[in-house]
Amino acid sequence: MIWVSWRQHRSQAIACLGVLAGLAIYAIVVGSSMRTAFGHDGLTGCLARSQGTICPAGVTAFMGEFGSEVNIAFWSVALIVPGLIGVLVGAPLIARELEYGTWRLAWSQTVTRARWLTVKLALVTGGLVVLGAAMTAVITWYRAPMDQLTGHLLHNIYDFEGLVLTAYILCAFGFAVLAGLLLRRSIPAMIAAFIPWLVIRLVVEFLLRPHFLAPVTGPQNCAANECGDGIGYVPQATGHIGDWILGQPANSTGYLYQPADRFWPFQFIEAGIFVALTAAALGATIWLLHRRAA
Image (spheres, one colour):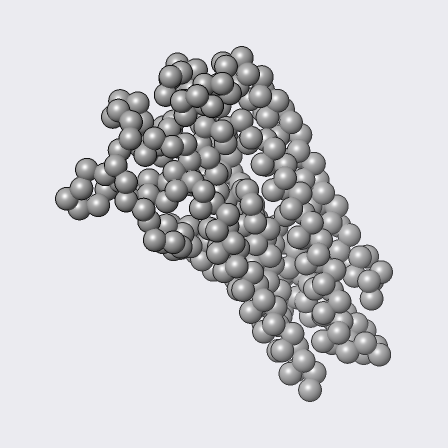
């Protein structure tokens, strides 16, 4: 079973390795340039002493050179990549067998349908976890100089570090496997899985994530002309790099924000949501396949 599963999915594995290799090349080129500029501008000592407030010229120069490419362009391009990887790998897993009639051979052996699917899911899911972890490691290394100015919690940054990138891939994969069983066609299954994945992804990011934990209310701790909110400001209006400013409470001169040190609790919460959705989709797939066999 393992050898057969590898034979069936090796082209997808090679394609995923190609994506990882392309990402690594890009990360090395841009990341090395950022490290050189970061050291040249003397930002390490400045950040250690003042959160960047005593070297605005250096911060502005660095953000002007790399901010748009690293914080905006990269996020815009890579936003849908985890979903695309998941649906491209997941949709054909069952749909291809049904589409081409090879299920008659695959499911007429001594191995039951449920066991056949479980082995394939274990192998492919394990590969996707390794891929997601590798992509996360590459992106975290690539972003390291920028992260010293932005932290990890802000939009456009949070989505590619920690646990959530792998969870996004797994969720899209789970949706695609279920859609493949229900629709029996690979391409329609990809579309049917990707759209709800993207909707859920955006709902979680913009509606649920700001409220994973109760926001903190605090005063503005730096001069108005030195800081603000969003990835273009160093530090944030709270006076601390990486705090996520949510807005101003009514009748208050302070800010409502999520502290930067909540990055990992937020990661565990959000990854848990997407892993739970993955488990529900794959569990439903196994149950439906077993029921059809019965």
